[in-house]
Image (cartoon, rainbow, N blue to C red; front, side, top):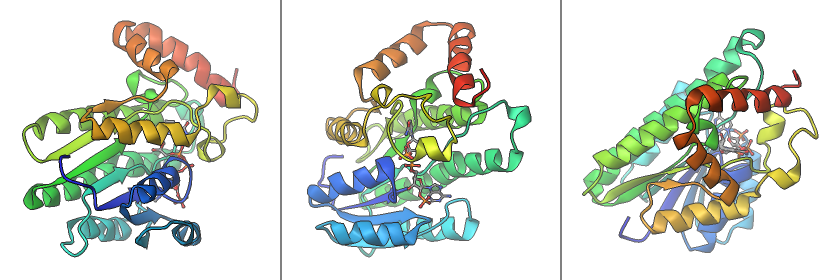
Length: 261
Ligand SMILES: NC(=O)c1ccc[n+]([C@@H]2O[C@H](COP(=O)([O-])OP(=O)(O)OC[C@H]3O[C@@H](n4cnc5c(N)ncnc54)[C@H](OP(=O)(O)O)[C@@H]3O)[C@@H](O)[C@H]2O)c1
């Protein structure tokens, strides 16, 4: 994106990586539109930021709420020139042993909402002649993920979709970037019900360097941002190791998260 970002809409801004996007963008003087279900968390964050903040509570798995956020992205008043599609969740376990409804809701949030919001943002931004989108995937999108089969597949979608869209937009004033973090210390692990102690803090990044790397890579015009040396090595490994091997390794790791090893 060549021109300055004046307003960013961040989904999943009530916690973790999304909250950190809000904090770092506010420090750069960017006005914000914050989206998540927990309105009180968004209001509290808005009160802490020295920025023009609009709070837009929404459950992105509810079609009516999703429509409202799409409409906000298309609005010409206080236009959004950066969308951060960050809201998402995961879960671990063998598919046959999991309730299907949360798995289907994961697809609605991690895939359908991200697709619809990308579509709304990019269409409006092309018409305005400026803009950008950061889609938050995961290193889980680099290979099949047994015992996190749905989550890994949603993040493979985010990777493929974002890289393809970036190519479609080549030569236009609108850019999209994939951010693929590895394990990051947020509420994600609680939401995913990962067995306490299985994932040591030392094996995780904090959200601050993840978001700093993302914003730096976006400013440099990168299409893919993978923060952290270990995660970059994992990406390179996934590019050369056959999926028959990488899926075995990934399955062994994820079984431990679900407490089934
Ligand atoms: N943490 C990791 O290890 C890790 C690694 C790789 C990728 N990621 C990805 O990073 C992104 C952010 O995750 P995080 O680690 O920051 O997790 P987090 O701390 O649990 O934050 C998730 C955010 O998504 C929002 N959200 C969840 N369901 C929603 C819904 N139906 N509608 C609207 N907002 C919703 C939550 O807000 P409300 O509950 O208030 O709605 C929260 O703000 C996700 O896409 C995740 O897959 C995380």
